[in-house]
Image 1 (tube, rainbow, N blue to C red):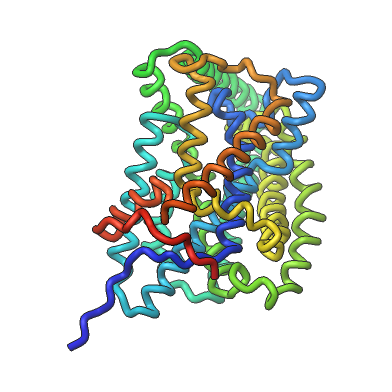
Image 2 (image 1 turned 135 degrees about the horizontal axis):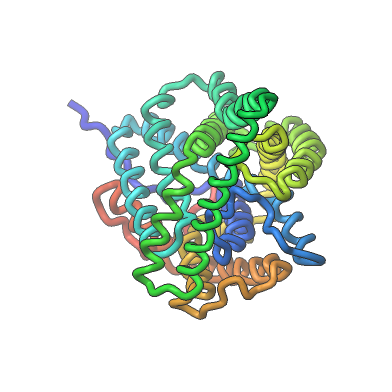
Length: 413
């Protein structure tokens, strides 16, 4: 009787996926840079208040072009990775679900350590949680339904916000109800301001222990809004699976027409929608569902979907020309963690203490310079080792055995 093949780590790589992952990694750093030196509870306030001149222009540009778009790309790549593992296991007739659940469990451990020891803005623990939901609810969803479910889940926060904004608008027609809502908003804003000040104080001058406690408070603040982040992330997971299974991420030439349309629609429509959403959110508080906030949520959510697909449609067909991004993409987990380690040390009080002292206008310059170093370092490392350090540890926990570190470079297919 034949013994089923055992699923294990592979050295085969798809260039377009590695390049896209590297591109997304740069965008993630560009967006996260603000939150390495800004209190995370302020995320519900949109663009940073009080900025003027070049700082203001750079902030609005990053929010329009990058915020919400690169986490979407990263989420699509996570879903594509799931589809790749599932396909490889099926071809080898190897067990899959136990292996993938171990993979998610290890990602959750890495994410929890990241939150505890480094940065509260971690996405890895959230990805692991949403990954378990995907396996539970959508593990056998037919390919033809993946993109449909994806769209439904991505627009759910828009529907939540619109319904809440509509309800508030109706209730406020009653003077007594309007007064009660105004009082509640004032109380909520006071609580938010207190949370922001506690966060700023801890990161600017707190000890490592004080910062560690604050990290979990900030992470819990974000997690409390799970209805607004779980459905879209899950939707982008499913969209990434659809892009991979239909061959769009691995055979761009066969889908040239689709990529052309996505570039035109994604950038041509997504860019103005995103810009309008960012403008509407200026001075608003996303925790309070006014009609203006509902409109901003709709524009930014739809704009993020379209613009992320627009960026993807620019990068994937140009993968050969952008191959220099691939080494960073092959070590995306390691590079993501290094970004957090380095910049929190630069900004936090237990490190160099530059909290809120770096002008916003310098963010693109510092991001580009740091990422260039990461690309070069990744290229140097992968010339000598098969996996990045974090990737090697993740594979060890996933497959239950240590993959060899030294060996030939990954094969691009």
